[in-house]
Length: 211
Length: 210
Image (cartoon, rainbow over all chains, first blue to last red; front, side, top):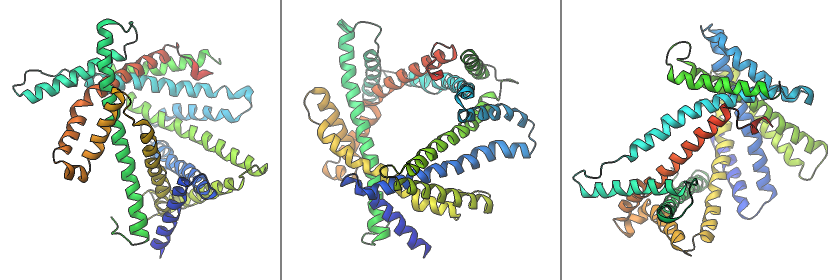
């Protein structure tokens, strides 16, 4: 019984959202506000369970050796709540923002160099004489694609002469990459749409076989 | 106090995180992982501010009986329903996110269909946008159009039926042709992110304080 009720609620809400295709209407707005309200509370529960309980309460309760260091994030966390105070005191929240910005900037500096920049550069340094002509051509295309794209984004020099020709090839490569990314995004969205349609026609109306 | 202390805090924390990567010994060694936990804890507090702002907005809507105020009641209904089942599940079970709890039931019945339909809805808008954008007016637009069509058709069974080599071409486009420019873009993004982070740590970029 509970399962049937669940399918009817989920199916009804799915149709409420799809009603937007007809235009903005009260049914869609109902589902939209329900979504915002539900997800706000969902994230509160999520943060309580996975962050506050598991990262703060449990280590303190278990008297972990490094638990005392949690004073630092808790201190800055409570300072963040100073935004609720009158304007005279609310500027204190800047300290917390500065703390998170500092951590974020530090992590990004290391993470981007180690996780993105160096691996991408390393992966682009490819051999052009592997003994297999198809691999050679593919590697050549990848190298040309990377260098010409970077040339297009190099704004420190005037785009004339050989630079201009390189960046022109770069634009063509970028268009190909954007086309592929667009195609992939459309596929992902259509896949979600098929999922919802199968749910409505299969699980709810039993017209097609449910997945 | 209002400007200098935050700048100093950003500099010290950013510097410590970077140093902890280069000095893998105590007291810096585990600091990288530790700071990630700290980051999550502080973000948890910011969520409280976000939810509070949302609740205040909808309370104001109801109090002033603004146009469409009854949608704010729907917001509160969804909010308190989820909060209640979440608290009940937190009390009853060690993990409210596991299947079988009343919270998971609500998540599966309300949040998943709403969320996935919202994203699925975009398929229609992407289709209408692409109809307008995909006009082969010049070489660049033609390249974009051809690549997108190859990727879309080549990755479905119909593409294989149409031409058996099409899936192979789609894979080649993905593995080779778009790989170079994507790498170029990612290298650019990484360089930009590092430059911006250094500007923040060194106090050159101060917009977050305004």
